[in-house]
Structure formats: C-alpha cells, structure tokens
Image (cartoon, rainbow, N blue to C red):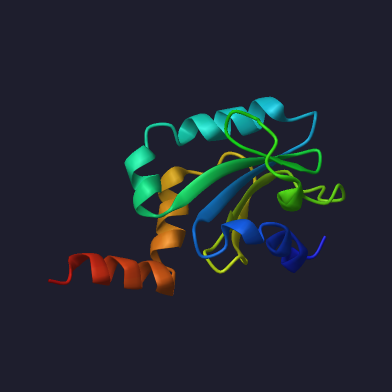
Length: 126
C-alpha cells in the first residue's frame, strides 16, 4: 500500500497530533500490546511531542483501549505491514520499524523533525 494512502486516511489528526501506529493482524496482537507497554512510562514525553498511540488492526483504526475510531479514519484492509509507523503532523509517514521500537529512538526521530525543532525553540523563547 502506498504510504500516501495511509496518510490520507488519517487526515483527521493532521496538524493536531503525531501518530504512532502499532500495525497488527490477528497473529501479532501480543507484540503490539508489548510495544504499547514500552511507552506507558513516557506519558509526559508523548504529550510534549503531541504523540498519540493508535492501533491499526485488520484494516481498522483503534484507540489504545482498542475501541474503533470513526469510519473516516478506517485504514484499507490491504495494509499488510506489521510493526510501528510514525506519522508526522503533516500527515506523512516519517519512520517505520518492526516491533519492538525503543521509545527513545521514536522521540529522537521526532525531535529531529523541523516542526518539532520549531516547537522547542518557541517553547523556550521569552
């Protein structure tokens, strides 16, 4: 599936949040849950980076409680990828990894983005 198609399906989050999609299928639910658990102690870091954790399971977009999100954010059934995808504020794919991505690596990738650097600069300017 083209990366741009994925970004278009997630347009409701564009310019509001960065997304970390945990892409799973029926065979790797345990892996995606363990990946989510790696982030549980980083709530403040995620909030600072406007980062939301979502599941993509069998072509549907789910929140962290595995509740189905609105229809217009559903993913195409042909996704097929399992692992982690980072979507930037602009709605494009910024990074991909298999399970188990280290939170510090995800934060490093985000912090290297121009928009994030601008956020940090604006936060610390008087």
